[in-house]
Length: 256
Image (cartoon, rainbow, N blue to C red; front, side):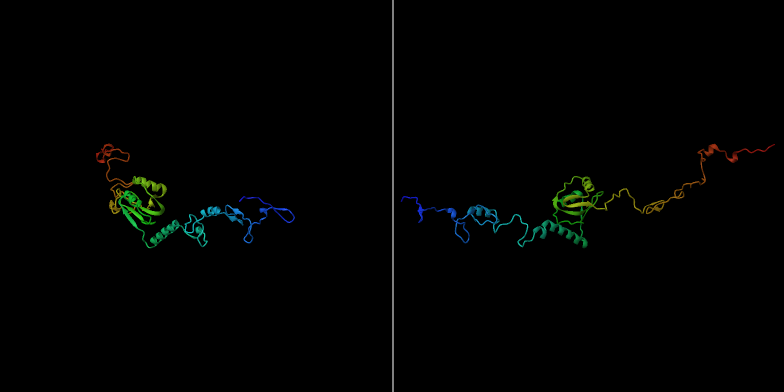
């Protein structure tokens, strides 16, 4: 069938045209032309296209998904103001354990033969193996014993080279970190006693447990300003036997 264009007339003979512009905009109550939005828009009453809805939904979290970032929990509580982090809890636990150990007198002491042995053991220790206040005693002489003054959040292995290098680090920084543990020198540093003598020893029967005052008599010496019982020289250093004559040898005479 051939398609033809037709024009309509009214009773007055006027042509009628189907002006679509006269169709009202559709609402929930009135049928009419529909306006579409490609993306969701605030306060818009237009219909959203299927493609626009999919694009909008693709960027939203699935009902069974896990949020990568959130600022509040399901009850609306601000996470940063309401909850403690694991790091903060770990620090609190460390402080609580340290306080508990100190209160119960449970600070531990561990002995090592040398710094090299200590570094090897502490480098491989886990964070909870030692607590603040724990002491490390060294069998090696002339090096300070150490104690744990802080426990770090992360481990940093220390490479041992010499005792002197380790001690220098402590003297410079106040501590040396071995694994998780920051170690400082005990104030009761060991002293090399090789050149010392016991206080029970005496000098001329005088004990060394207090200051010693020696008199000339103690050492068999002539007191200051004293007169020697026997001497070979006078005060000027002249040899007496060669310089002076004995009274018995002096010739006496009488006037005639």
